[in-house]
Image 1: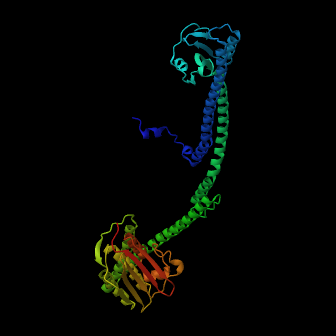
Image 2: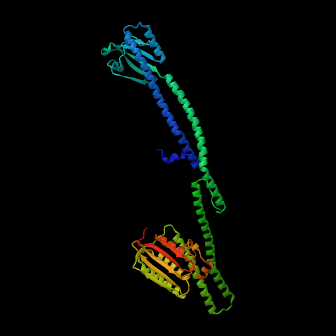
Image 3: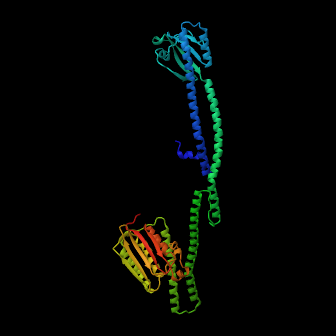
Length: 483
């Protein structure tokens, strides 16, 4: 059996035949030629039908006149009338056909071919004509055939005394039709060539903005995404250009974030290692160092190892959050108790800077969540509120819910975030104040991890802040998890 995939092998594999340019060209060519071809065919068929009908009517009219003359002159009984005989031959010659006269005894009394004279002709059409039934005319091969009755008598007493059987050739008519068809084909080919040339020009003109865009994009790629795409050939390409420029801006921002990510990771990972190297070298350079010094240096080395582990742990967590399908271990959890446990772990950190943590809840809330992942989100939000706060400040965590979601607000009295940084704070390693952030500590991944955990729960997170006025993060999570 011939399969569809086997037929694909016969299609051209050249890129040109798969291009939009070729498809537009073919479409325009078909639009320009197919309707014209169909119309010309319809005209030819209609003209042929009308010509045959006209020829049939002309022959019928001439036969009616001839039948009247034959009936009046009694030519069926006496064929000595040379004038009528001449008219029969003249009419047969005019239409390049044959005329046969048949009397009421079905005997052939005249045949312009001289082949059947004196013989008897019995046919269904002839008998119908004698009975007064109209047979009309029909086309048979290369001839139009018709039977016309010969009437005798006066008015109501008129009877059919014979019939005229006529065969008129259509060769000359068909010759003219063939000439006309040849002329039409020549015109169609000429028009087809013109339409093809126009289709090529129009397709190139229509595709030119896309070629221009492709060339410009190639130049941008070779130039490492420097510059912008500036194409205004038409509204569509201008819109694509603007959209592409927006994408370029995001790509540049991602590239900057990537470079900063590499720099920050390198710095954050190398700093603890460098500190441990300095501490170890200091111990090795001192002979007979006291135990107390060893203990102090080892304590510092342990702290640097913990710091290194924290960075690596956050990086691994972020990688897991970046997966397209994050697997959640969902269970029904008392959110009030869940938040209380998180705040309980963080209060000792807040007490160092004398920061008060306040938890407010308007109702008891239960929801389907992954406690491990969502704990990371709220822990990072509260921990940031503590780190970037003022001494003797406060952190307020508020819980509320409706019939579909529960809401957690984390507000602080800290230094706030500049308005121009609000769109970027959830990006990994983004720091509003890089030097101050390093003094405070952390990896710069906390908010990225928090957003990943919230999004994995089909939730949303937003921030409101301004310099010196504190910051408020609002998290919305569905009460029932939707996979």
